[in-house]
Image 1 (spheres, rainbow, N blue to C red):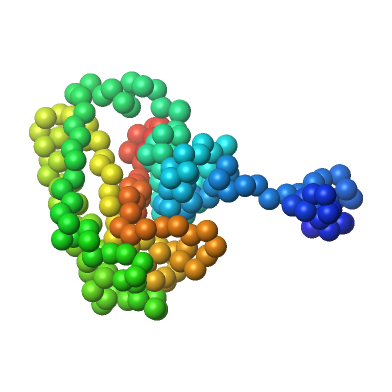
Image 2 (spheres, one colour):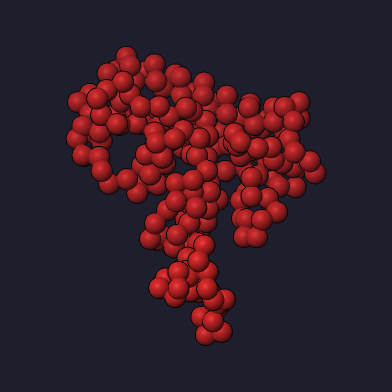
Length: 205
């Protein structure tokens, strides 16, 4: 709104707006990435780049999911060290079992030329991989409760990208310029679990 001039030849990525009082421009996505680029494609991790800001988009659980995404990415600096990271009973973590017979069934070349359907074998393979990890998570949670420890969520691996708002072939950004996503991939926890706040006065996730 209020665009008054096309980009100048000496600054092709800038446009004057609001009577020339404001300059509009594109921000480089390796410094200001979307949530998909940073958390799902993990493009900045491959480049070794440090973002200026991350847009918390493309996640499934509103504020709770956003906070956990930031924690997973090492970008959330609000928590006090104790008690969040040093709970009274201690922590319990584990390394998930990911057998090759479950992880080797995926790849861009194996995606169908149409949107996925629930009856597709590839979708069933995805559920088999995720359910295998959920069974381990359930056992670990039971052990943590018995030991009075806080369970640290593992890094989950998904065979297909979880999308809740539209159909796709297995990768949401497939066909877009710059899409560099490989399957299977390390998926954020909100692609597997529903991240909801604990019933407490705080807004913790």
